[in-house]
Amino acid sequence: MALSLLLAAFTIIFLAYNIYQKLRFRLPPGPRPWPVVGNLYDIKPVRFRCFEEWAKTYGPILSVWFGPTLNVIVSTSELAKQVLKDKDPQLADRHRSPSAAKFSRGGKDLIWADYGPHYVKVRKLCTLELFSQKRLEALRPIREDEVTSMVESIYKDCTNPDNKGKALELRKYLGAVAFNNITRLAFGKRFVNSDGAIDEQGLEFKAIIANGNKIGASLGMAMHIPWLQWMFPYLGNELTKHEARRGRLTKAIMEEHSLACRRTGDAKHHFVAALFTLRDQFELSEDTIIGLLWDMIIAGMDTTAISVEWAMAELIKNPRVQQKAQEELDRIIGPDRLMTESNFPNLPYLQCVAKEALRLHPPTPLMLPHRANANVKIGGYDVPKDSSVNVNVWAIGRDPSVWKSPLDFRPERFIEEDVDMKGHDFRLLPFGAGRRVCPGAQLAINLVTSMLGHLLHHFTWAPSNGLRPEEIDMEEAPGQVTYMRTQLLAVPEPRLPSHLYKRVAVDM
Ligand code: HEM
Figure 1 (cartoon, protein in one colour):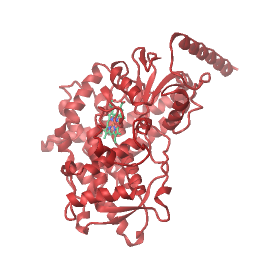
Figure 2 (figure 1 turned 180 degrees about the vertical axis):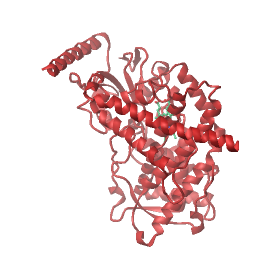
Figure 3 (figure 1 turned 90 degrees about the vertical axis):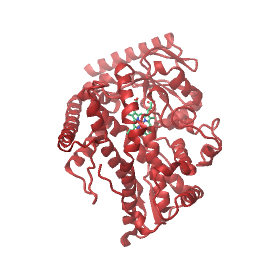
């Protein structure tokens, strides 16, 4: 009885609020929302595809109700420019779900911080210090170590007589590079030894990430309908426990770092070391340091591995492109040495392969949700204060009015026209644009290009036995980051002398 009354009350409030919004504002068109849940039940699991479909009916700027919150989704480059450039100052806040709010302590990190003095300070720290060209270069040996370690593992597995001609799950190897690279970059720690065994801290680290994902998934509807959260009384507890666990591990690692510093006096380049040094200058609280370190893990781990898996799927589906990239590698690097990042300027086609993969398969297809800090107009419609705004960069990357034969994987298009992908050209936005553009873009581009270059230089790739290239499943799994629905199985054939398959390990 009490529940029915509550539901009726909320339905009335919702309807009244909707009518008020409709009368007061000229909202973008969209599917009719239901009371309380809005459009949540109508949205198909792969959201960016669903929004692209709706855009065909309602137009390129959509109203979609996530419970009581209005989400405005734009899907043309012209509207993306309005969101990320013209109205950037009014749209640079973040919409925080209950779990994001808890983990970031109300936005004391970077990703979930609203645009304001704290954000400006932390962003400056990222631009000038954490992601400076100097640090990017200083951390290069770690990336090269991890990429060559990947090559060594693949070689070992594919030359093992038991595996002859068998397909490998590429995601496992790509995930290892992403994991080791990001933990070394952020924490200065490789939790996995050279035999592939993971230590106790590494296990705890992985368990924390898995638990964070589990909590996020279990929120379901309550993620978007705040008043439903009373139905999950245990959740507040879970979030607090999770956050405490994350804090404990991070503090233990920071403590180890400061002990090691006192013992050896060595200067290190990883983010823990940088944040320790800059703590006073930037007045960083412990919450901010912990938040920043985890931001890097959350934002920088899956995204790079996902990008390479999609790129490899395209290269296997398009043997012509694979061969052309290999011809370039053979011409510039040859069969007697390893590729390094310093070779990139001489490998334009390889760079275009990475770019083309990010055009067709951006790992965060709806970017991250921005939030309006004032009433603004986009595309002639009102976007009221506190609405969320998403840019469907996936749809923009496939828009036939912008791209010739958009569904073809044709890296040559970027040789014909050099299109920026770091936020200056609104046709290609895998890293977003404007104030909140991804600060790790260059690092990600280097790692993705390096992984692709090594995979192609060292091996020729074919589809899993019995599968024709055109039968590879190119559909996406649901989620905020977009994995392939069916993980890629591929058969590698080594193409260089065996001494070039050794890991180039560095201790830093
Ligand atoms: C291919 C890999 C990557 C892609 C496609 C990507 C894409 C993005 C996108 C679309 C955003 C949101 C932009 C917005 O809200 O407007 C973002 C934000 C962010 N990314 Fe990346 N990213 C990648 C890798 C990385 C890496 C390696 C790191 C760090 C190690 C990183 C750190 C961040 C951070 C901290 C933010 C939040 C920025 C803010 O809110 O101001 N990303 N990224």
